[in-house]
Image: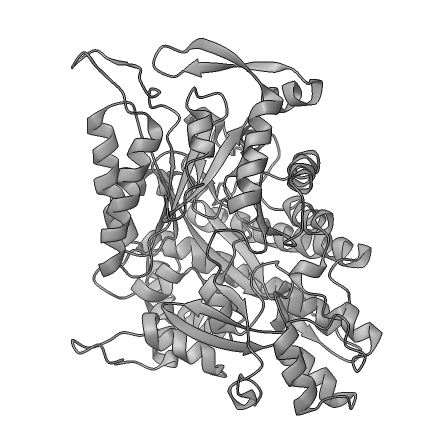
Length: 575
């Protein structure tokens, strides 16, 4: 396997099997073989040809053309055997449910999964508790308990625990929730998002008010200004990056199994809406591996084959997964949701010579994701012919006259691909280049990185020098560097050089052909105003996105990607 220095560091730190002294007892190649063999066991129940599919899975993984979510790489073939990254657990309005869910979340977090919760069913702060004749402490107080428990759980877990906390915009405690992360260090193990309804957005557009509803009684308790609540959301997001927005009615318009209930929450990064007690296994195609020829082009034939094998891999993963709860196993095997996405998108654009924030890039995003969506649905239909449709197919949105049954209720998701993109040595998800040279904090280690494509182009075109690279390291971007040709500067525009509306345009382009949702950070410069955040939120809603997260450079939230200093050793970065 061709692995970068950073990939080997990450694999050694968390992915490779270790002995009792913490020393790796397998190579990266053996890890990929372990994962491929374990997933291919599912084939024995159908085709009986597990060996052939083990080989195909191994070729895809070891070639870094596709990687599944981290729990699959970590746990496949181990006693724990929990392979899914995304879970949503129900939180009902009772102590038994609140703490029962916390217990269940502990096992999921320990296995490397991420958990999402809607706290919208909990009675508001100061509401009556009839059983004790006391008063309720409200959703935010219980989120703090979950956060503290996560601190303890993640110490012995497969990776750092992550949670999503969601509250409906019409909950009486919505303002407490919006401001919950304003104080430094509060709810550090949570991303939080407001579940925004269409009726709220309509009230906001008209300058009107809307009702806050007590979930215990389902009765309105007061009317508030939609603009006042929205302004508080915007102000807190401008300061801290939280809360994000989840457009909950938009999500439910695309709920594939509406007869099973409404979707109320997502996984921690927001890209995977799920029903209560539902899970999903994710995986990502590395688009940078599907470019070939001179002039360069996308190899759609190879991409088709990669998508079909990846869909089969993810469906097999459901079959051999060891679930933490029987309820989750029943839900996941009932809907068989998978989430195939992409990484290496910024790399692909560089290889094709296309500027990230251009109409050409947005059009290509639609073209590529439409192709992946169509190919993945074809693959699911083939699996349904071989193995049967997902059990809850009847009454689903796919159950239409003349339509082919599907094996999976959802096929596509765009995940952030944090550490798996480091293993694959490609850009993360559909994000632009963060900086040309930077260090990131991953698994408590500093990883140094420089864009290999920039180095290659600089050498090919004759403007590479150690002095140039030291300046790039100091700046982090190419802005203002006279030594770099203009067309190269355009090609390597970094996240903070791209306008927020273009970030959103890219997210919307991918969302158009994605079954689930799209994880994308809308980067804002340090000098962005509150109204810039407001404009981004409104544009995302009108563009059909299912949610939005903004991050203004320099806010309180601790980042994992930082600029390098000029004294960084070039030998650590450039081979």
